[in-house]
Image (cartoon, rainbow, N blue to C red):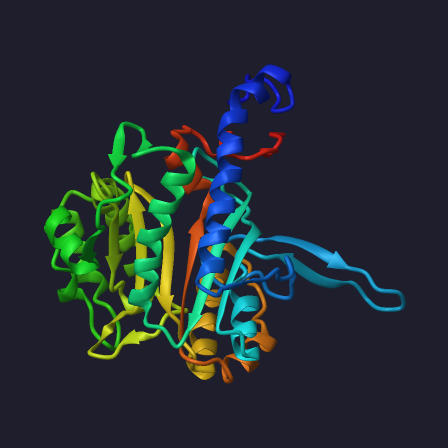
Length: 347
């Protein structure tokens, strides 16, 4: 994409403008949908003490300079999640944010270093309700865009069709012939057994891959391309070991109350029944940062204010949806830059 015209070139802008106008209609329709259901739209701070504590997410750092004070490191958020949960603790029952978020080391047709995350939370609601929200939002988006299908790279989804519901274990069995349950236990996953099963399925592994790395390889190579064809897929009950912010399923602690929404083979959303135990949350986030330091040689601080607020947070469920990706599929845009008014300027 290095040889293309700058986004501000008149013809280049004119070519993209219909998609950008459709984006505006989609955002307006989604705001109306949330308002009709008594959600309060919030605006949380982009500059944070901690950008988030997922091992493989990379943040942009800066220095906060105050008169007479030493420089303090701050980060652009990778998600508004911590701030939104503080508002749940403050007593807000339903909130939504169209949040600008920032992720380093991410670039491609579906990735940009700055993008819009549509994130919403329901206090006192099971995470299945958020799954229903996602199905409704797909339909609202398609109607606003004036389309009867979502499309990406030759794949199509009927936005009005009821989603397919598929557990992660079912998906691994169906698309990779792997018994995922055999490698899971409440104590620790079986890395060696899982590696052998993945290798037998034809997945190439690195010697230092851990259990989560193997899971990701199978997911990307075999599972994700098969999801969201004809209708959206809701993939749910992710392994608890890979769900640091989600609460475990009461009847099976090996898996978590976590789901992801797929359409046309593209991941659109990630939702949780939210973990509200601050001690367990601290343990999990610390483990994520220890792994980050092992792999990348860096770690981010924990947000102590978030952990304090978590003790007061009511039972809740939340979901983060990539708005730009959803607009792409609704408008047929081939690249995330096409749906951004001012896409990133390449170096």
